Image (tube, rainbow, N blue to C red; front, side):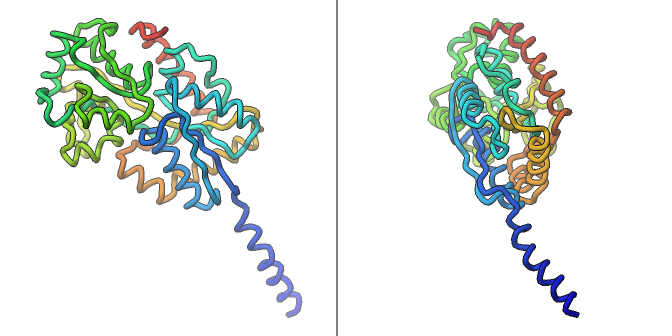
Length: 317
């Protein structure tokens, strides 16, 4: 009996320690201004890490510029060997690093997990004379410089999509009047303020504005119509362009294989939590979870594909 009581006492003594075996503080770098896709993913992941018991607190740091290169450089320089730091990056970053011939690259960070993806959507102000994608493309073909198209950083997935659309219209992408924004908040303000003709971003970032009737969605970059998204595809309207934007997280340089594997477990636990799933459903995110070596292989192929596209469209500096 005494032995049993002693055993229970030991269990009770150990339990608080086990419950606190979580990271005191996590740091997540969102290499863009607040309000956009990187920032939303970073904060959603931070909330999920806390809700799933992986971290007590999470600090999200925003550092915009050069399509994510400035934030990546700061992450590489400041977080070397830190097993509790993550960088958010994605297709936007791949394109921007390639276009800008950046001194930093994905070989300097540790691939952890691709989290999600989403299709892009092109929208215009509600007062715009462009009622359909065909209206917009006809005006662009007639006078390219008069149609300003906003999106994320130069060379990113939004810019690549606009350039591919230009190519399909038979107009040299060099003539594209593309307006890059360092954060989604700035881009949304520009389209709502009628400062640009059209704006490209992830559907989830603009879904609320579309549903509220504050902007008009002309087309989505999916291959086929999505039953949950009441927007026709670019392809079905005669502009055969299909792109999607993925986002993932990367660990710091210099972490050990064991630390990398622990980060993968923590991120996957967070992404499977109700907190993340609720956000993903609200934002219309596609579940594209892929981790470790598999994610690294995907990344390398995406870099090759993007480099070929950037060269073809003459987007590089």
